Length: 166
Image (cartoon, rainbow, N blue to C red; front, side, top):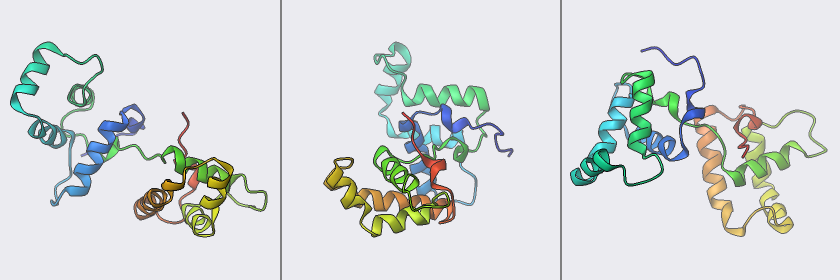
């Protein structure tokens, strides 16, 4: 299977990206996960009456995950690797933390994911909560999120590559 040379993940909704990522995390197989296998999972999660009704009438105004996935399959094929369609961006709160580390006047080099984690452990979140940039209850989720990014990309990955711009 050939990996897609373009950044196709930027064309995937956050909901579908999360579904694909959960399928990749749950996979207990040596075979690569493709868009077709993600579609089979999604169809299996929906009750048969729902999928039949949706195919006939499209009740929702927004594009469903199934419609979005079918469009990707039509464009890239059933055998396209699902990993290519997972968005690798930080949440909005983690993006604020990354920016705070980036704009620290004492920093001489661009921060890595490891440096952001170190800043979190050094009290940056408390400072941002005090400034009103973050909510108090976001600290546990931020640690889990930075750990996930580090597990996937390593501590030396540049943190600014994961910023969310919305």
